[in-house]
Length: 253
Image 1 (tube, rainbow, N blue to C red):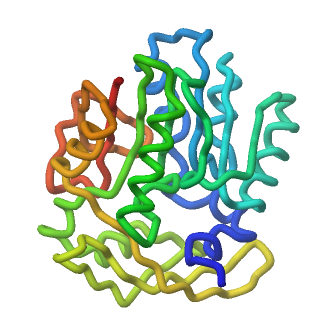
Image 2: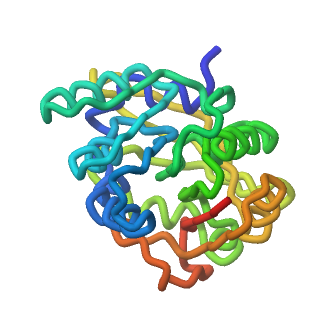
Image 3: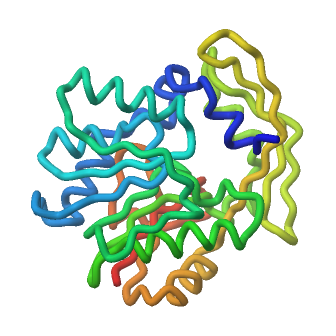
């Protein structure tokens, strides 16, 4: 039986590209370039690349990018978009929990909950971080976003989701946030690219900054910085607050 995150992204590529949270690609890639000092010689691994929006934009700017994702339909869309742009990008169907890259990349990115925080156990989420770390060369850098565990302590996740929902986009209800596990359980309703209605029982893990820091330190990252993640305008000047739904993590080996 497929997990909710496999069902969610099946035949949801066109709709996904139109969701409000996928509209910040240009600004996010501007930030990534700045973080690697515009060095076109560096290689990038995009974990949970989805429809390839960051991979394609970074390739356009002259970087060598490998994109991996669990969803065949998302990858199909990524390959189609890349071919339209005459971009030669390696897109592979891989499970981020079972990656076998070792010391191959200068930078790994996991943006917009690209795998990490969607898994059903903390151990699986940790495996993804571990595999991202293993994929990096010495002195490599990891940039990712994840759900900010401070947010649901002060705000209603349901109200936040409702405020971001646009016509024809996914909707969410029956939220319950578990203080013992920091998981939000909800029912997500979507209409896929073929017009099929789906109702999925989802649960996502929210992390507090100290947890992320500890996990990354255990993976031998030497520098770990955490900021508020603003859609399309990532910045080191955005101090993380309880108002931020997501946090931006930058870790260096």
